[in-house]
Image (cartoon, rainbow, N blue to C red; front, side, top):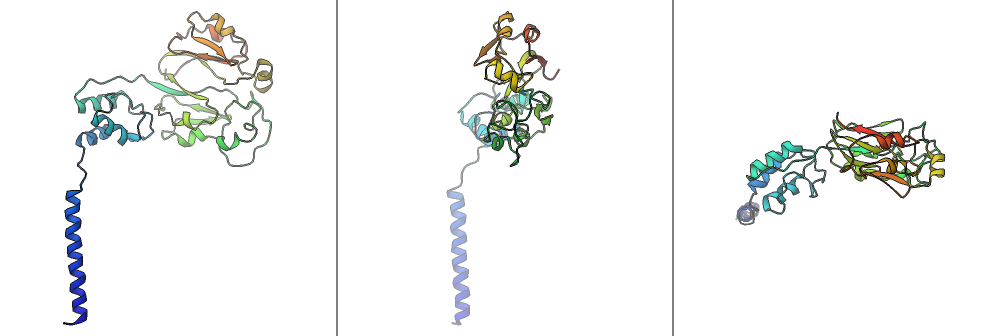
Length: 268
């Protein structure tokens, strides 16, 4: 037999056997589709932010399908609409999601907190914070280079006068900005409710804070003393608000001598 023809036949035979083997393997080793998980996945927005506590939307859908969690209201970006859609797929009662939005606890604008050095390097808050705590006099304040802006998939954050500001009507509470901020200045605050918010995270004593920022919390405890609902506490020289207790009466704002507390109504 012609050697060339023999080679062609052998290659063709090997290809045929390999093809049959792959076909059989694809059937035998196939991973069965989880149709319930696929239906749940269609209910989710696809942000893959991890705010639900799972490895993205696929992980959350899989966990719900397998019964690893029965909470249909863990998707903050999807909100109550996603929770209701998931509940419909699973045939259970939908859990509700309390609307929340990110809030930046800093008001260290260029007029309030001066620069102590001229930073020249990678324009990243994380990188800049490693050089003497950042370019501003207040080492606890917003650096303003936009790490939070970069990770926000929804365009809800802007840098205004060297401080990050969040548009609550766009924010989905995915928490990516919270993870990105090296100063831990961002927190979720209830939407459509009147609450007190402290725009400072400085933990220095009052005398030092006054030198670093005009509107920094000095830990004087006047806000704590006037609050009738035990909603505000001064810890580590900084005031903190318990939003579950705060009724937004405004007495702490009136009593703050440095105007570090503001009454806010996100989304209203």
